[in-house]
Length: 92
Image 1 (cartoon, rainbow, N blue to C red):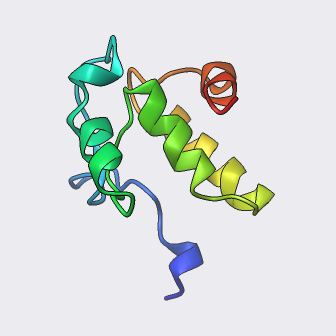
Image 2 (image 1 turned 30 degrees about the vertical axis):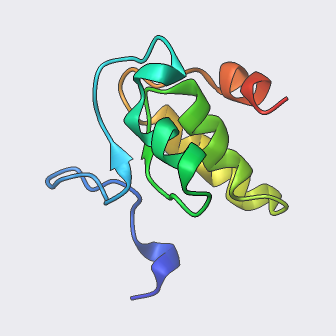
């Protein structure tokens, strides 16, 4: 089975490693993943309720537009995730 045919999030199991669920974030100072990313540039964990984490996730797929679209689609599937427009605005 190729990596392209694997789902990003499986319905009957835990989310994939690196994608954290939780309540919506009100600031980046509350987000442990953002704090760690500031000190470790190779940090690859993202909290899907945090706008800055979502923006980092989409930015990590640059310059591949199809990969960026896939990251935006994955973000939309998480409960409490920021909107597509908010994530795109967070990239600027």
